[in-house]
Length: 70
Image (cartoon, rainbow, N blue to C red):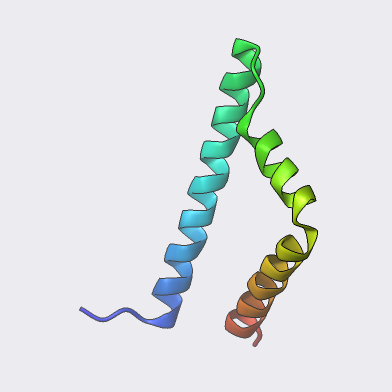
């Protein structure tokens, strides 16, 4: 069994979609129960470390650009 670049990219995309879905589900449950959602904490960390957040965005953009550019 060998993994190709396309299979690895698909797994990474699926993992990100799963994480986004779980964050949205947790936010909906938190709002329904009247407590702060986890995304508020993520937003606070992103605002506390703007350079690190920018660096992560650049790395993700470089990886996607490298893997998906025709």
